[in-house]
Length: 295
Image (tube, rainbow, N blue to C red; front, side, top):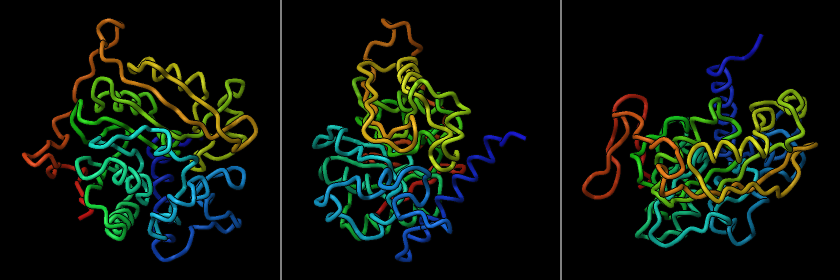
């Protein structure tokens, strides 16, 4: 019997909650099968995931718990071309490693938001941001298929090995396009399959919650981004994570002329999205989405 979307999402939430709890107590979330710290939540080859993908200088800027909770397959902050004053959004921000690094890169006039659906990860990220002394990092609770931010409010979207875990990837790409300003850009690290692999062949190489079975192919990623309204799309393989599957850097720029390209003009998602206050920060919202500032 096929696993439903809700069941997959709950499996992902539970697995990452366990990893957050382990990291917050000084462990690395290693599983009973002996997986190393970097591979605690993801299947694949040793060294393909985790803090080792950041250079020593960056790791030195981070609280220990942030490094231990790093479960990504790349370093999106190294490719996102962040600028002073940018507003950055990290999808699936986990323990906050990329939010902390981004917050420092954009400086006091910029903002770094992290979005995560897991309470344990949000609590860990808040503590890590406080320990790092970062005051312009803010964390949102929600799912990446329904981003709780207004349209045209973000300069850069980053993400680290999370989009492959989504149960509705077209919705994620559409939401990224919605929240980005015209000309806004993405710098994403993700697991991506070679085009030769079928969905069944991807599933043979690892589980959905292990970042493998749900991965898009290179062609699927490129087509999905173009359909969502992006230009200058590139998907570049960086390192192997399994046979025919790779860590990859995904980059694109939101088109500033959707009408010319015959694309739909994306409207704000719902009236439950948070609104900016007069201080440029987000107000609390109704429903399941909450705002959890680091400070």
